[in-house]
Every structure is written in C-alpha cells, then in structure tokens.
Image (cartoon, rainbow, N blue to C red):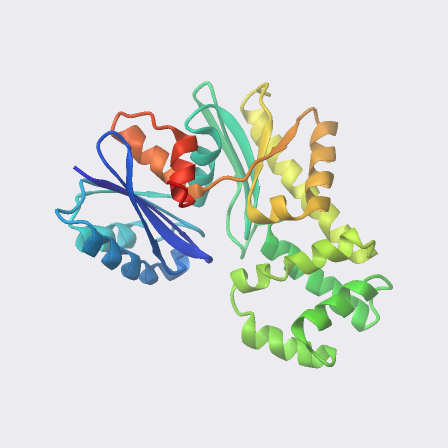
Length: 306
C-alpha cells in the first residue's frame, strides 16, 4: 500500500509518496497552499492522483496558517484521493517533527508567523502561533508591519528615528513618495504573506544601524525568547537546546544574534537549524505506520537529492 505526506505554504506545496516501510517512492510538486487558500490544494491532489495508480491508504497534510478548517481539508483530500484515513497537522507540529524526528526537544520559529513548542518526557507545551491578526510577534509579517509603521512615524515627523528604514522601503516599492508607497502597499500587499516579504528590509536596516529598525528587531527577539522561555518553564527546564527554525530567523543574522543572546541570559542555548516541514509530516505519517524513518534520508529525497 502507498501513503502520502503533504505540506503546503505560501511558497508552494509538495507531496512525498511512501510505501509501508516509509521508503520514499515519489515527490510531487504543486502551487502555493495555506489554510487560508486550501482550495489550491486541489491541483496538487489531482497531480498526485494521476501519478499513482491504486490510490492511498493513509495521508497526512500540513499547511501554513491557522488550521481552522480541518474538516473541509479532510473532506477534500478524502474525495480526491479516495482515502479514508486523513490526518491534518498544524505548521507547529510539522516543524517540530522535522526538527526532532519524533524525539524530545524545544523549537522556536520565526517564519511568516512565530511560535514555540516543545515535548519532554511526555509533557507538551506551546506558546504563540495564534495567527497574524492577534499574535505572531517576532515573525516576518509582524516585523515588516512594525517596520512600515516606524517608517511612517518618521515620515510624518512623529519620530526622529527611521530615516534609512523609510528610504529603503520607498526604494524597494519603487515609490516616488510616501503617498505612492501607501497606494502600492494597499493594492499589492493585501495578505500577511506578501507583507512578510518586506521583513528583510527591516533586517537589513537594523544591520545597517537604523535605530527604528534595530528597535523592531530587538523587540522581535524579545518575543521569540519569551515564547521559548514559556515553553521551557512548563517543561521543567529540560537540558536541551532551543532549535531555531523558520526562514526569517535563519535568514536574518541580527535577529538570530539578538535572540541567542537573550536565550543565553535565560540559561538556554539557541541552535539554528534549517528543516523541511514536509519531512515533519512524513515522520508523523510513518509513526502511524509503526515505522521509524531515517529523517536525514527523507530530507534528502524531499530536496530532490535521491
């Protein structure tokens, strides 16, 4: 029998087909898919159905965003792939399983959003991850939004800091003036994923010494460290490092450094690690098959290396 692990985010979606021994058979790629745009999952499911004859026995799906529509996704997957057993994972669990390969550990993530999660000796704890509307402090969307807000405060004279940040934003948007920038933002950046794509401007400005951008990054690191500390406390202060994951945390050096310094002051050690959430979904699926997979080998396959 064959099984499929699926993960999708605003960058794209992929499915990894496995046999009963959790050996990878095929990787299929699809369009961007999140919990907010899960209808686009249909394209990947159609490709997957055409590529595999005989259907699937189990499927595990993980998507970016807040999983408020699990039943709809289960129904869509079940109908498209003619499978009865469908598990839906949050981004939190996909990243956690990919980071720890099912073992104990603590992660802190800064991607579009932010969260921390850990498991130690059977105890589970999480912090953050409530979505961009109410939470996600320290994630790329939050950093970009705060950076834009600080730039506008400088532009209209409510702050003396942010000159380089403001000019960098105008340059990125190719806007002649602040009003033009505002029109571009409200017409082209209407979802949190698009706004998050501007977070690197704040990171670069902070690394260049802009006070307003530096304040935003330092506040972001405080929120990330606070989430990790909350999880650590509830797990009984386990002697394990905090695994740092997510594209923004890994890509913004000053955010990593500031977060690492704060965690050290709290008695914790940050270990940045690039992980593939598809591998996390695959591990979860394999665990339901009673198999412990080689996570390193699965990551290589997911990257297209074998």
